[in-house]
Image (cartoon, rainbow, N blue to C red; front, top):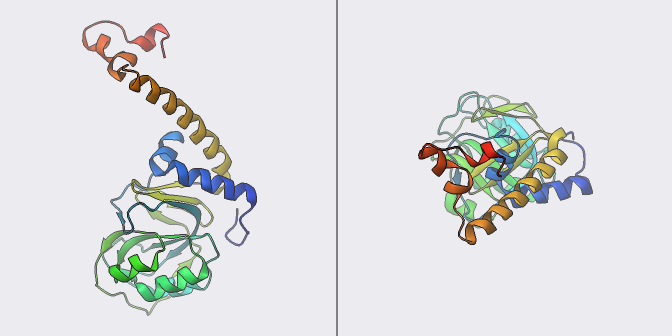
Length: 226
């Protein structure tokens, strides 16, 4: 899925499924791949979203690239803002967020700082950020819109699916979206079964064979017991 391609019905369904599952489940279901492994502040508690990334690699401590990004956002995009080195510099505030909201952005992931936090919370677009800091950015150097960026050890390319919720962020390559949905649904079905077993009084300490192992016996899984 390229950044200029409209979201299809199938993709919309996939986005809804991934958003509902959340970052942790998506990450775990895909074999612990795609975690954005940094601390993130969720400005609006309870918010969750998934969408294709529209990325910008800003020049260091400069947000001119964000202004350009605002002109290229399409409805449903997740605006992903980064610099060569993550620093608590405010790449975005209420004026730029207003532009992104009007353009239809579904959310914002900022690997830097945001400011005007009270105003951002009233605007309503979901935002995740590394820092909250008023330190302003320059506007002298053009950034690179639709360039791959790396945040928390994970590369985010334009069009990759970014999943954001209270647990943080996970990324699914655009070409793996349907596979990710299948893996997520399988994991959710498995967890639903385990949840019922635990509610019935069974304990994972026994089910996974940890008690037997700790007491010098064999693990249940070694005997073919799930």
